[in-house]
Length: 232
Image (cartoon, rainbow, N blue to C red; front, side, top):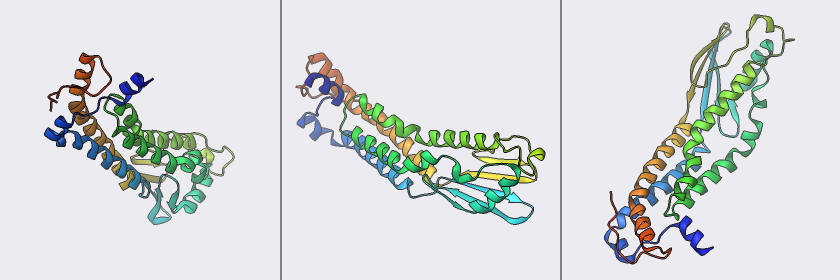
């Protein structure tokens, strides 16, 4: 059991090696902590924004998506969508919105957990956070596609609108309406956090792989007896 745990946790750093190359080991730690904090901050920021331009609304209608709620002209957009048979916006992603804060917090904790892992398992803990921004956009695309392609045939204007998929990002047209969708600060921050994690994992491997190689050569799960020369 201890040997298996040592393989997951990875080797410890020899005190002399730590004293000689402290920055080499602190850098991936600092980057992982920074990424975890960025993910937590993103919870409170808007992730997505859509502007709906319609003839009867000269200034357009706006809806802003946070990870757990929608804000803006949701009621007005729902009233327009009702005529073409689209469901109310708040019916979408109810499970995702209910669990988003908990899930992002869990991702942040996994990234923080990677700080204490000096093996390839650090990457396995961090990858879910790396994929989170893409997963958010894919999930949003699927919901928009489902709503736009499952219109109520009994709606007053259902016969004038063909099934459609509003774009997750960029500009789209539905009849006389135009939609403009864009990423917002929360999603951008989460994407930057993903890049920071990738850099952290690269530096993590450069720092700890020599220790792992030394441990493998010694055939022991304990601290390496020699001071390895870590590579940049």
